[in-house]
Length: 341
Image (tube, rainbow, N blue to C red; front, side, top):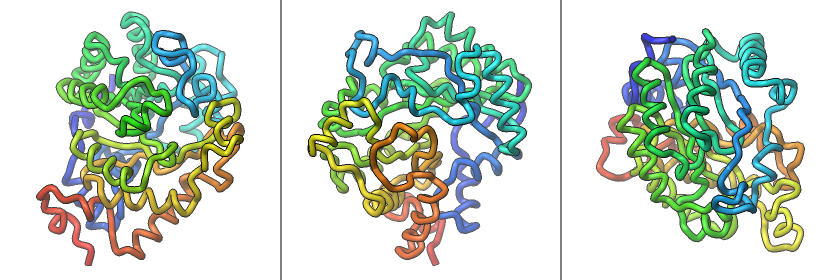
């Protein structure tokens, strides 16, 4: 068990203030953790072969319109060497792989494929315990749907927090707007995420919201509204992705029929900057684009890798003389926190 520095269960605003004063334009996840934990953290992707209620018939058998068969094509290249070898072998191989690459000192096991709380709680405990028993693992980051978090699962995760582990829930909300979640066949709305975040906070569990920009018929103004909504939800972090049209999806059919236009590189960069300006300065930005498992991508035809998108985002922010939270206006002392001059 790893204990000690993992006692801060909410985002440390003082660390963020120091980052902004040091010139950071937005609250990058990696830099925050280097400063708050005292060492580098890397994520260890694992596939525990979870299914999804939006695929197995409980809610739907069609999935979201952009999802290619439980997101199997969205896997990391490094991960494909060990897929199918069992969880223990996956864990051993993946931790060694990322440590040998110099990715960091300690790992967060990232359960990323399917809905990773969608099993009986005793089976979940077996999976989670296996991951946490590795000496180089300090916690879990669990990708799931907000409507798949019954109290017994939340209590299990809260127990790990009490033991000193870093526990994150990565909630696939994708959009806060009902017309969008309905159109993409998400099979849940915003209320489920609000409830999941509130219940997680009671147990010291950190929360992250996935958001996709460029979804069908979502407007630039709605993106700004999205920033305001997630800020009021008090989530700890967000992941931002462009909408990708993948092979063998319903969205691919819409694209081929001329019913969907993918977001352009220029539009996406502007969208990210608009979002960052309007979101709380006290929220971590874990990712701003998609950079893995893109061999099944049809469009957009521009390079969505975060190491390419990131510098372009920062360039626009510098041109605007802006940074995260500069338009976030609910009475916070934002100017005192991080003057732009």
